[in-house]
Structure formats: C-alpha cells, structure tokens
Length: 121
Image 1 (tube, rainbow, N blue to C red):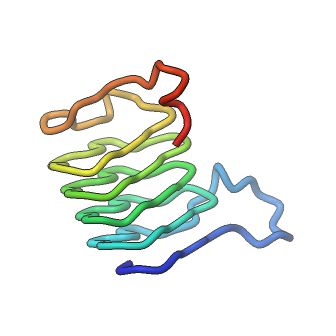
Image 2: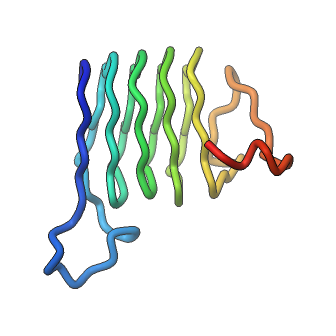
C-alpha cells in the first residue's frame, strides 16, 4: 500500500462472524508506506511488517504482527498473536486486547489507555 484506501469485509450474505474469520492473508501490508486499510476480520501472520507510514485497522492479528514497523499506526480491535511488535522501532500500535506475554516488548513501550480523553482515536 503506497496511498489510497483499502476496505475489506465479508460478503453480506456470508453467515459467519467477521471477528472470528481470517479476512486477509499472510504478510498483508508488508512494507506499506502510506494510505489507509480497514479489515473487517482477522489479519493473518506478519500483518503490517515493515509498515513505514500506513494506517490500518483490523479485528485481530496473527503471529508477528507489526514486526520491524518504523512508522504508521495499527489498531487491533481483538486478539493478537505471538511475537507482536518484534523489532518495532517507530509508529504506534493500539491493541484493545493487549496480552503483554505475547508482545516482544524489547524495543517498545507498553502502556494502558486509562484517561477518558485518550480512549478516542
């Protein structure tokens, strides 16, 4: 992704719940530099790896999400996989269901959103 907007969601006639379905395959947004992407479902492994400027929202992410991310914003509204944020040196990732034990926090700062004014993106 190097600009523009991508919106991915399940077909309206599909009977499954989007929050439990993988909607984007491995390495989606690898090396993204700009633009916005919205995924109505879970993104598979290595989501937003090497993201250097794009903004993305998904309902969950597989293993190695945001690996080596240098800029940009990622918002995860559900579950996260193992090794999240490994090698991340910039950008911001918001994870609603943050599980610190799954996060590779060696190079990132983790904090909870506690102030009411910080809860709005």
